[in-house]
Figure 1 (cartoon, helix red, strand yellow):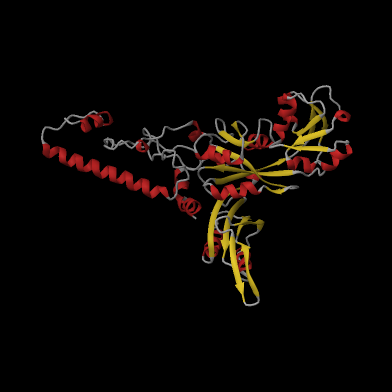
Figure 2: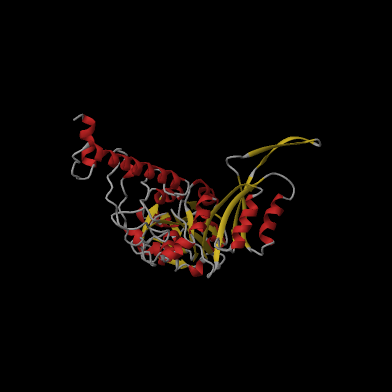
Length: 423
């Protein structure tokens, strides 16, 4: 027996060798057919899978357990046929074991949720509000949180998208387009800034305030009233509290949450110091797979698209939704980084360079609604690019996401999921 055959022996199940060569021939043919089917299925799923290439593809059947749906629940037991493993040594063929994330409950117990910042950050509070019993995973940067979910180091990510005072977090809009994660929910968090300092330090002792740039801007007038003139910007609010505590600073305070004060042993010198008391941040909840949209509860759909240059193009795009009475809650433009500049020329001026733009838009509509699908189909006819970032329940109706749906409901709405993953 040659060396190649010896290498394959550990991968073959125990079988009784047939006595004749004629009986083994059909078995080899069946095995080859099975391998070809597996490869074809893998190719077919490549267009809709949102898992990174570094991670194994989720198998359809794992040890008799049916495929896990987009709601995270495993399907009913499925009999596993007695088929041999492929002769190839491709380890991506091997099934990925089911994890606790495949069987999560509504509270998110056991879920690993990534957020940007240090423990005690507002993003961690938002993650806990979205998934009360989750295990939070702090990340240094926004991009790190995206990659943590893509690489299966975390099950979800909760990241800020816009603030009622500071506006949009443009970095996360750009990352939404760069990565293939789906928005599966939103959560709003009221931001209550506190002025923190080491024990024994009073407000009149402070000469400097340290925090995230937006937090400093949101407390500008209050800090001036306290006589604190110097500002020091850092990556996040909880990181400022951590620095003040670790370095035992006596003339510098931190603007952060009351939770950060508890974690780092600081005193709260003043509460609710933001200039505008109505300070709310909207966070998005991200996952590797989209959820199944519904029409029996308020839903929101987020999209991004680009248009050809010309008069009335944006008006035409907005009309697609106005004609179908679909309300828009947000629209924002960002420069198209893959096509940053466009040279324009006409007979009345010299050639000039202008930006091409992407338009991010939120609709008060569900992808399960036919008029939403028709509107996006109409938009796709003249848009140069269109992608659905997610269709998800509004903040007040978040609880149903993780409860799961019956198999018949999943099958009935499979075409909607296909639209979400392929557009």
